[in-house]
Amino acid sequence: MRAAARYAYFNAQVSLLASRLLSDAQITTLIEVSREQCNEVLKTKGLLSSSLETHPDMAAWERELTTPLLADLAVLGRAVSGRARDFLIYWAHRYELNNLKAIIRGKMIGLPASVLREQLIDVSPYTTLPVDELLGAEDIKELLRYLERTAYYVDIARQARRVLEERHDLFALDAAIGPRFYAGLSQRAQAIEGADGVDLKLLVGSLIDRINLVWLLRYRFIYRLSPSEAYYLLIPAHYRLGGRQLLDLAELGSVEEVISRLPAPFPAMLEKTTNISEVTETLRHWTWQLAEKVLKRSVFNLARGFAYLLLRDRELRHLRTMLKGKRLALDPHLIRIAMGLEASHAPLEDLIERTDQS
Image (cartoon, rainbow, N blue to C red; front, side, top):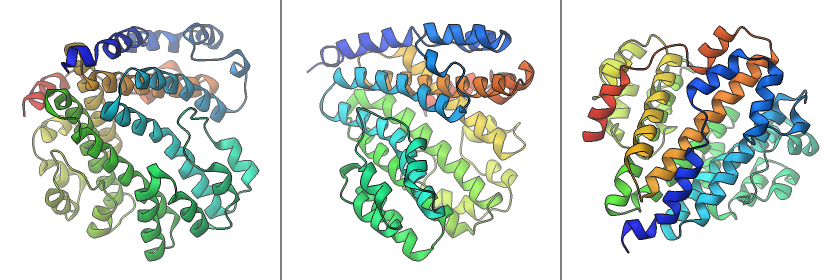
């Protein structure tokens, strides 16, 4: 079946949803207005319910902001089938993964099940975790046994069990969960064949490279893990940064050394960064700019929908930061800096072109 026929309805839905995205300029405007005016705009966009307008719990706001994105995922998921639908549904479990991490952390420090349940995000209709069983488990080992019976989390549960047996450590256990998820995402992107999958692999590859590089820097230079430990906790999937290359980078002694030894386009992209936070923010904007290009230039493929979801996630990330800033009565200038809107990322544009062609 031709891509135009297979993705015609999906493409129309992506265009409709993308037209509703808040631009950086619109979000910047919201930073400047009063909290009440900001809330009114968010309510008209369906991003804030009246019940949460004066809610004192910021975590409740964060949970609420996830709901529209999951609704968008449901719309897009119904518009495709087969491997394309499997990819989107799998991406939706990224949000359920946060619930799993919250439960594991809570179990490790002995939080009551009732307290843990209040911290969970409603990820309907994508719920696959046996939440009641996990919350009721006597210990982490029993929790992992329940998890191994859940289709989407078999690999994650087995990896977590191996880490638990080797190191009875909450940090290591928590860090072991993310890599298996992104490895699964990479496998599903690779399964989209032909021209339909080119831009999708580009976007997923940028995510994996970004996450692996940032995690490597954090594990080595913040948590001071050994090179082998840091490498072990990375995603076992690669794009521009291969496994041997990441292992060599893990042996280096500073952030500056790592950046200087990276392949193109990373050294030029990161030459003005001075710390890991700036590296993280620069690479995050790189992925978002790639997503913007894919959304604008491509039609009738899955990548365009995934690009929209990445940009929707950016919008919600910015809104969470803005709402927290307003709740704390921060100066608008500080909120813009926290959102990454104050600094210019224009130099990345030339690098995007080179990234597309390499």
